[in-house]
Structure formats: structure tokens, C-alpha cells
Image (cartoon, rainbow, N blue to C red; front, side, top):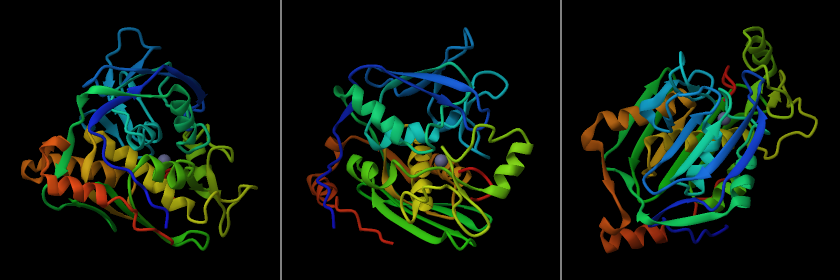
Length: 321
Ligand SMILES: [Zn+2]
């Protein structure tokens, strides 16, 4: 079992230098360029549409979410919005990046290869800087649940950013898959970052007919036919689908605006359940509190450090997830 020596960062973090990332959007199929730049402590992660002069900056925050039906969209759909934010936000969250300014010249974050690997590589190239401000965490104080049809999300108190993601598709190449883990940069890089967006051929055709998924293809989506994977290279992991759902959950939960000390269990979830979970948490003032690690008791801190070994795992919906 790989052992992670990760402990929770005390201080906020940003990039050491700006990076530029180019690619096409998966839904519109249009090229876009992102420039991700370092930002001051307490800035948070903020998107700015450079193609819409005078448009307001858009915070990566649950209060800015306008849609979660196919991907996670921030901002005003009639005005400045940014869609498909979940993969870049997953990379930011997993790598502990708190403060970034992300300039984007179109409505959609590039899909790249459908995973978060391109963002991780770009950030690694820029390097990281620890900042002179304490990181604030959201500490879950009691269980909060959200249900949608046969899906549910459950957030419980825990001393780390922990996840337990389960999917169950009536498809012979997917079936039931489960991934429990504590989020750390090392775990994310090794087990989650390169898991791609997945979908079913029949849905891709339907979405294209509706002028969605215009940029999707075998180079950015793991596509399932009626009984097998259609991509020539096959899957990157035998349970790539649950790993991608985990990636989306990490990105979507980061819309809380700070790292969550809690265990998020998701069953047959997706962007809708993830976002409903964040809303349900903030709807109950007794369910959470702000904390810095310096405010936790010594016993809790050592618990947080010792609790770092991931319970080792191993083990489309109609939308492109
Ligand atoms: Zn995704």
C-alpha cells in the first residue's frame, strides 16, 4: 500500500509564475486560451473573460454557479460565464492552490485530453509559492445529505479532505466501481488526474444533434459503445470512470471556496449532486465552521497527520461528466 506523508498545508499557495494553456471547448468546439497567473493571499480563484470587455470577474464559488446539467458553469449565462470549470478546479484543489487569476478568451475552459493532467503539468512547470497567510478550512460538524432520484451525496465530519465515490452503470464495461481516498497532491497525481471524461456513443450523437459536445471526440473522451470501449487505446485504468467521477467531485466541492475537512460520499453522483451537496452544507449554519489548522487542538492535528494513508482502493450518465 503506497503511503502518503501528506499533511494539510497551514499556509495559502499560488503559482510561482503565469502559465498559458490552449485548447478547444468540449461543448462549443471553439479554441480558447487560458492564462493562469499568481494572485495575492485571500484572492481566491477568479475567472475573467478577456473577450468581453468590461465584464465582471467570476469567482470560483458555489454562489456563482448557474448550471450543472452537462458541466459546471459559473457566472451569468446571459452575460459573462465560464463553463467546464470542474477539471481545472480539481487540479487547483488537489494541488493546494488557493489564489489564482484565470484569464480566458472564450466561454469554455479547454477540455484538453478530457482529464486534469494538462493542468497539473502546466502548474508544475510554473512552480508553487507558499504565501504568508493562513489557509482557512471549512470544517464539517455534522452529517449533511442530499438526494436526487437514485443518487445521493453525504458529507460527514472528518479530519482530512476525504472522498468515497461510487458509480453503478448497467453497462458491462463499467458496472459498479468504488474509490475511497484522502485527497493529497500525490494521490491525485497518481490515481485521478489522468482519468478522462467519459460518455456513451449514443448520447454523444444525441448531444451533437443538440449542438452540444461539438468538441468531443476520442482524443478527449472515453467513449463506450453498446458493450465496450471504442477508443483504440482503451482505458487508462480499468476503473477510469469512477476515477473521473472522483475528479469531478474534487473540482465541484472546491466551489465551497475553501478546502472542506470532511468525508464526501457520493453514490451515482455527478455535477448536480456535488453542487447540491455544497448548497446543502451552506444552507445549514450548524453543519460547518471556518477553521485554520492552528485552531485545531493538538490531538486533532496529530490525528490529521496520522490519518494520511488512503484506504487503498481496489477495486455516463446521459451527460458527458
Ligand atoms: Zn468531468
